Length: 65
Image (tube, rainbow, N blue to C red; front, side, top):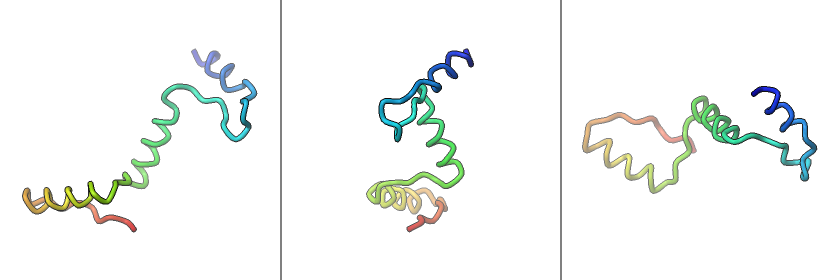
């Protein structure tokens, strides 16, 4: 299967700024980045988590601005 992936990636992309990638590669890249740097949340989600934190006695990570 690796040879098929290599053949796909070796194709010249239509837009050089967007290299050929395989299904799932973008998701894996995001997952790795979020594991390392944390997950970005919309401010409305962060507010609802603060409510849950108080309600359930949790201590959630501090938001990075």
